[in-house]
Length: 374
Image (tube, rainbow, N blue to C red):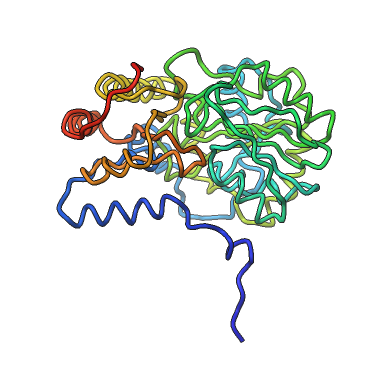
C-alpha cells in the first residue's frame, strides 16, 4: 500500500526560491558570474567576540538544554529590550529563547484554538504555512503601497481568528509601522481574544528613525514579539532568537516547546548572551548595509517603492525585468513570489564590491528603463 503524505504538504506549491535556485544553477552552468540578491540570507562575518563566546562555551560534557533557556540569556534579552525599546520585561515570565525565529513562527498556530490565521500579503511564507499545517484556514490581508504597506484590519470576523501576523520592518517592502498601529491591532486582539504576533526580525536594520516594537505597548495582553540574531548580529547559522510578551502566552509556549525538541544548544545561548549585550557591532553591520543600499539606489533607475528599513530594496519592476537581469547573472526575487507582482526585491547581502558590479551591469548594460526617481 502506498504511503500517503499530508494533504497540506501535497497541496503546497513549490517554495518559490527553489525555482529561483534552479534558474540560478542553469545560468551559472553557462559560465555566467552570479551576483545573488535573491535569498535574504546575511553573508556578513559573525563578529569575532561572538565566535569566541561560542567556543569558550563548548564543554567536554554535553547535556540536553532546558526548553526555557538559560537564565543569563533571558536576562540579556530583557536588558536589550529595555535599552532599545524602553520596555520592561520579566525575564522569568515574559521571555523564552528559540532556535532562531522560524521554528517558533511556524509552530505558534499549533498552540492556539480557532479556525483562522490572518497573514499579510506580501509576506514571509512561513506565517501561512505554519497555519495550514496546524489545520487553520488563512485570511489574506493585502498590503498596498497606497496604504503605506499596512494591512486594513476592518471587515474581518476576528471572533473566529486565532492569530494575526504582523511583520515590521516588513519583508519584502522594508516598511515600518507606527506604535499607533500596534495599539489598534492589540486592542482588537484583546477585545476578540486572538493573538497579535509581531515578527520583528529586521528591527535593527534601519536607515531612518529606529523602528518601533509591539513590546512598547503599555498593555501586552495577547501580544507576542519575535526577534532573532540572524540579521542584527550576522548569525543566521547559529539559529538563535526569542519570543517575548504576554506571560500567559509565554507559559503556554513553555508547556508546548519541550514536546517538539527546539531548545537552543547551551553553547549557542552563551554566544547569544554576548551578542545581545553589545551594540557596537550592530552599528557596524547597519552601516555596511547602508553603503550597499545607497550605492544601488543611486545607480539603478528604478523607483524605490518600499520603506527605509530591513536589508531589502523593494523596487518598481516586474517578472520580465527580473528574468532579464537573471540572464545577466543578477539574481533578484520577483514580487510575484510574495503575491505582489509589479515589484522586485533585492536583498542587500552580497559584498559592496558585488553590489557595484551588479549596479554597473544591470543599470548600464541591462537596458533598464528609467522610472520615477527614487
